[in-house]
Structure formats: C-alpha cells, structure tokens
Image (cartoon, rainbow, N blue to C red; front, side, top):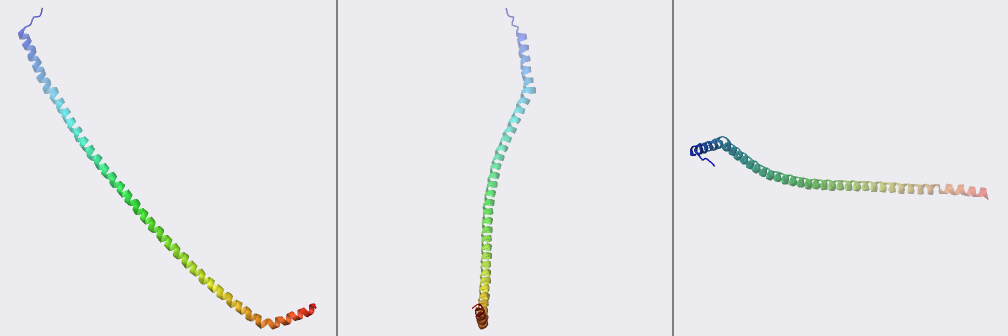
Length: 141
C-alpha cells in the first residue's frame, strides 16, 4: 500500500514552489519580455512598411504624372516644331516660286526682245535675201 508522509509531501510541495518561482524569475519572465519586445518591434516594422508602401504609391503616382506631363509637353513641342518647319518650308517654296516667276518673266521678255530684234533684222535683210533667192532660182531654172 501507499505510505503518505505529510512531511515528505510538504518538502516536495516546497521544492515544487521554489522551482516554479526560480523558473519564473530566470526563464519565463525573460522569455516573455523578449517575445513582447519582438512583437512590438514587428508591429513597428509593419507600420513602417505600411507607411513606406503608401509613400511608394505616392511616388509612383507623382512619377506617372510627371511622365504624362512630359509626354504632353513633348507632343506640344513636336507639334510646334512641325508647324514651324511647315511654315518655313512653305515660305521657302513661295520664295522659290516667286524667284522662278521672275526668272520666267525675264526670260520671256528677253525672248520677246530677241524676237523683235530678229524680225527687224529680217526686215533689214529681206531685200538682200530676195536678191539672193532670185539669183539662186535663176541659176536653177
């Protein structure tokens, strides 16, 4: 049968209580403290990550806006440059057309003057040509 001794039972209960107190002091409290610090640190890092994520989203939005503005500005500059080039090309074409018109007019005037000069020369030399022609025709006949 079991012998239950009260003194042994009290000593074992005392040792058990002392062991619990020592374990609480040396093991459980430091371990719980470490776990609480780690949890606090993780929670803080999660907040930082969340705020950084929001910051990144804001920066991405700013970048998207800047790129959109830059594209629209580039399109405006391109459009203005194209219009300027078209105007410049059209003015160059117009000036060349005017220059060619002046050259054409000058050429026609010179041609007309030569025509009149040749006509006068033919009139002056017509009697001489008639004489030459008639002498040639007499020589043939």
